[in-house]
Length: 267
Image (cartoon, rainbow, N blue to C red; front, side, top):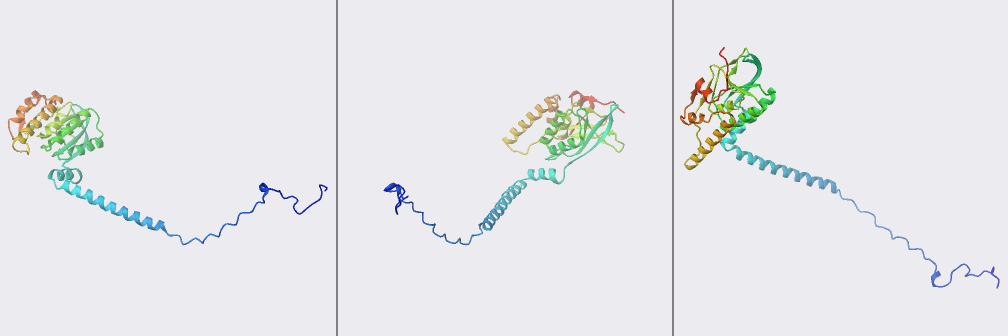
C-alpha cells in the first residue's frame, strides 16, 4: 500500500495515549445575585450610637469628679482664684529706683490658692528680666503659694521691694505681712523702701491633737530651710514664733535679719 493512500483513520493517533481530547462542559449558569444589604448605614448608626454613649459616660465621670473636687473648700478656693476671681492684681511701669529706671511689676492683694499660677503668667506678660523689680503690697495669704512665688522670683534673678506704683509712676511705701514676707525673701537683692513695713507672725495649722504638733514641726522645718536658702537669718523664726499677731519689723531689725539687703536712700 502506498504512503499517500488515505483511510478514515488517517491523522488520528492510535493507542491509549492518543485518545481524542474532550472539551470540558460549559460552566453551569450562576444564580442571579440577590439584593445587597445596606450594611454601611447600619454600621454608621451603631458607631454613632456608641460614640454618643461614650461621650455621655465621660461627661458623667468627669462631671462627677469635678463636683466631688469642688465640694471640698480648698478645691473651690483654687478654682475661684484660678478662673473666676483672682485675688492678686498687677501693673507694670518703668520706675526710677536708686537713681535709675527699672521695669517694675507691682503686685497687690491677698495671696490666693492659685496665686503661683497667676504670678507666673503675670511675669511672662511683663517680660521681666534679671535685675528688674517685683514690688509687693499684701497682707499675706496662702503659705505654700507664697513659697512657690518666692522660688520663681529667685530663679529669674529678680529684686523685690515693698511698695506700690502711684499715678506718677513712682514707687511709694506699702506693707507686706505674713506669707508675703516669703515672697519678698525670694528677691536678690531685697530693697528697703523708707516707710514700707514687713510683718511676721506665728503660723497655725488646721490639724488637731498630735497631728497639729507634727504639722507645725513640718511647717517650721520648711520655713527654716527656705529662709536659709534665701539668705535670711534663721533668727527670724524667733520673732515669728513669739506671737500670733503681726509683729512689724523696724528698719534695724529687717536689716539685722538680712531680710532687707539694700536699704534705699531716703527721698
